Image (tube, rainbow, N blue to C red; front, side, top):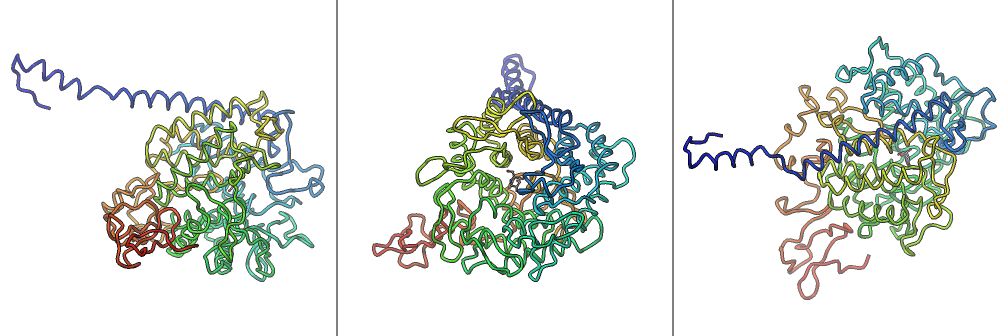
Length: 574
Ligand code: DMJ
């Protein structure tokens, strides 16, 4: 800035210069708050982690009320203890799950210690029946992500030598998964014995997410090892599942892996299906295969059309599209985060607000809430420290930088400390109406809940890189060598710059820019669209002569038609 040196103007110049350098007090306030909050979340993480290391490690998970442990891998499905040999001492699941969070917190000492311990002690040659999906997202995903973080020289996480030990463990585990896929349909069994493969008389029932969300971890494993079997098994299962969709592009919740028939026809974005949607989109981001986008796009539009009711999502019959259950399930709270990646920010924001209202109403999010009666589900009143709402809050803040999301995060941190913190860690809530606690600190509290809350207040880890987070919150960096579309010269920080202006303005969180540079449906790209399926009416005043001039409703994704008096609207019954 150049100022002419003139006594009468000096004061003005000084004033202008000062104004130029003075920091906006509101942004200063935000920065102070972010700093305080990230320290609070750091404390939470270490309270959970240290207690796990003291009272539960090397077992799987901490029992924070009794300061003891569980090897039941209970969240890995309903694993019965009698399936385990008495000397079974677990797979240190919480430690595996904590590594990527330790990296994000910048704790290289503890990260390296954990890597070395696992390298020397972890074995999968155990006679344990585990749930394939859970073991994949927690253990395989945890190992692969930590391996990638360990070999990334920018992180400087390992001071000594690292010889791909975590990758070798991941490969061993991946090979133990493969027998599960040997079914007539290619759809994997839900359960596998790590030592002996599929057990006799094993159940053939599985869920859509159970066999449709394996491709990030298994795909990454193939890319890292050069062994294509993992990715092809996961992809074959995904394709088979997609072939089984209804003509409405809906999938049920449970199915039989041998007959390939649906068992539960009710379809949703929540439990049993959730990460199926998530992995289609994230696989597209990570691998750039057009196929993933095509499947995701159809599935996503169907979800908007058949499940969405304003900001809420009910369930619907996959064959008829008719609503089945009107309930909010706490797992659905991940959906706004996914919508941010699609670029559907308005829709994400409105649903997120409703989830947060329910959180505020009870202090935490109940597992099920009946939308039609506005009451909590009579038996599913628990809150097992789930991360989904924190996850969506993080994505929405990244996309909008609206400080309101920081307030949401702050309120969640307060509730978690108030209701769930005990001297031995953080305990799940058995009943959100009484806040009675349960003796379990799930590993995803460290892998996801604390991680997303921390990232909300300190995004330096993701700011200059392009990561996707697996459904268990483990980061995997997007790299051109794995990607069908990225140029070889790509480096993660500049993806936004490589896209055209129009798409930069529709920036998604984390610079991911996942919306492909084709318009989804729009006849008028210059007109603002409110959701991915939204097609504005031809005339801004919604007047029309024929149906052709009417668009697609932003909220329901249903076709608008021209009424007798010449106005576009949702005139056709469903
Ligand atoms: C996590 O284990 C994963 O996010 C999974 O996809 C479903 N949700 C749980 C935690 O709530």
